[in-house]
Length: 138
Image (cartoon, rainbow, N blue to C red; front, side, top):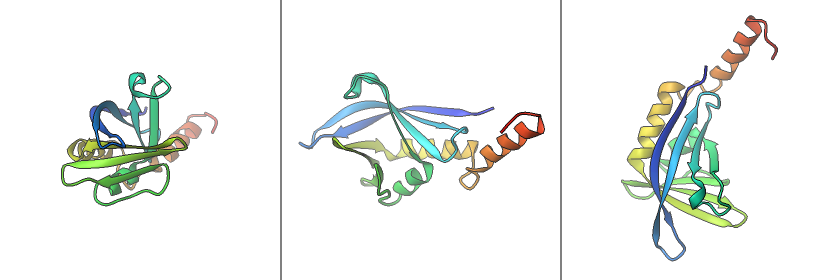
């Protein structure tokens, strides 16, 4: 059985003009995908009017809380002691969101209670082993 954590949070979208717009978001983690974290955005704040989910490595979030991390579509970096920037890069441009570092740190710590940082692959291997043991197919 998989465990899913969800933590509603707020973020601030940093516009090109330097304005900050409040954006609701939900941080999500599931033991079904142990190496990944998800940030879900509701339809009313997305360009296409549909729920949008960004998925990236949990280790990237952990590294980005301490120092600039990421070279792909998602980049995370500290923005002073109280905030962390998460940048989403697309063909249309870059969205920079500011999250409260304490919220991200709390969420990350909660994910470690579900799957320890060094055990991300153990869950899938265990599921496969149990499936075979009980006569299922892999």
